Length: 173
Image (cartoon, rainbow, N blue to C red; front, top):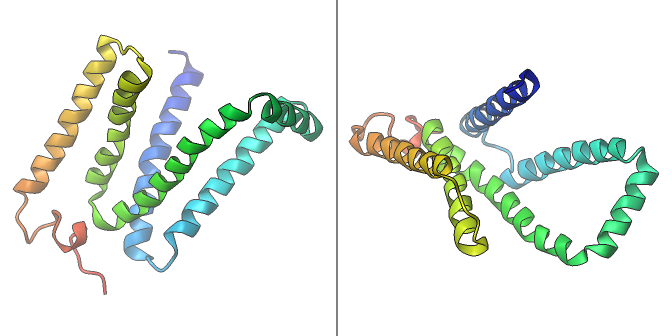
């Protein structure tokens, strides 16, 4: 793996872990904001960044507008099909905030990672996609990780930092 790819992978991993920890901290310490507003602001920021990147790729705003207009006309059905997963992704992000307030950070992260398993299973059953042996091994390890964390929660004493008390080990006042 070349260094730019390794750096991008490292940054994505750090962003993914950091976002969960920040979300959890904000929900436990500063829970007086709307989850839906937070999700919409985050999606708006991503839209602005991706729009700017696409404008640069197309040689400016006029080129981007021409490209989008042509794509929307030629591939209208594809855009509609892409809208469904986009809405589901937004709903998932909203539910992440609910999980942040009610689960330990490690349990929330592992539960969130099961999306990879469900994506693989749906791709296999609905789209007929074939997964390699390394990919299936990764799915197995993911399931084992989720089961290990679940077993740790089940074994935790009820007065400890397990699932009791809203899953974060202290009562909010």
